Image (cartoon, rainbow, N blue to C red; front, top):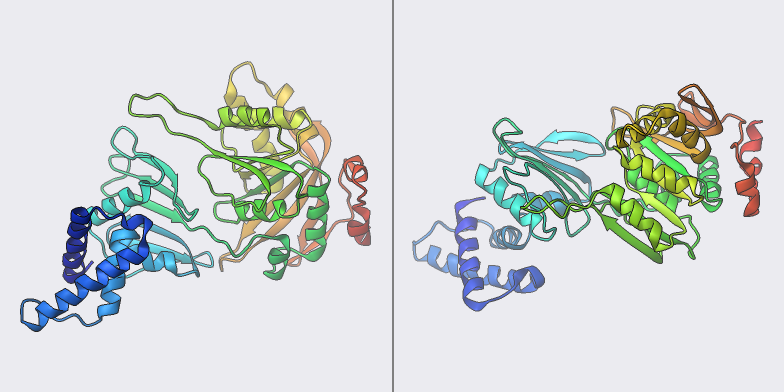
Length: 409
């Protein structure tokens, strides 16, 4: 932030305090205050009190961003081509476009980084301090914020902002982008309508949440959907929707609400479908129990392949306690999960569906058996000719996956 912008911003803040204005609720008022203070600054500059401003409208925008937005980061938020922003140190600020990282020329101070984080956390009610050196939070626009501070990090605050992307909301849009084929899209649409339990897997930033949004865009309008996440990321276009997120413990170490608790509470809300943003730990057991009760569901999981995702889902529930063993978990995963959609990203940042598999319902030792439904062949996602193991789910709603998949048989 330049000295003129800092000076004008302080004058605007002083005026806000004197007049008791709330700029966070009225951006037009913030713009007016900034324009007026910029004009006064320029008048003083003509008298020799300050150096003249080169770009008055641009200075006014920077002042508004520093007051109501995210200061030097605001241009990155305003640029729709930027997907992610992260700060490794005040002199190492990165952005990502189409999955490709870039080092920016932006240089901040440690104080500016702290001020930006505090401003981002204002709306969430969450905090970060020595007693709680990590924080996950959602920004008002739906972007996801993660912060880690020293002494967990070496010397600087580490900030990651995954921007909320509105442009991809349907399977059709993913087809247009080349992320999957029409044939695979139609099979996934049928699977959602049939109430199949779908697991979306992939590495970080491969588009798992985007895929959940797209899958749910094909659900029936009459469904009541309950979503459970660590922090709000899903943006479902569903008429009857309840969204819940976890809560951190307070300063006394109490009041924490975990994913396990939220999944259990979700079952009391009469859902027609349960969507869990991501399973990482023991909450996977509660999800399996919910799916085993006949409730259709979806979730995401980090994994290197579709089969690895099934293996991981068989392992995570063991974290719930010593009384849980694989003799219960593996058959439950085999019987509950109907479809696994695995996503990948190449070195050019292109995201796509790499494979779709369907568990057979059987297990061999600690492994869940599955058949590939779609796989990559020469770079193309093609059907294998195999059919999902539970055709009765499709038949119950008048659908026949053979119409889509039979061409490869």
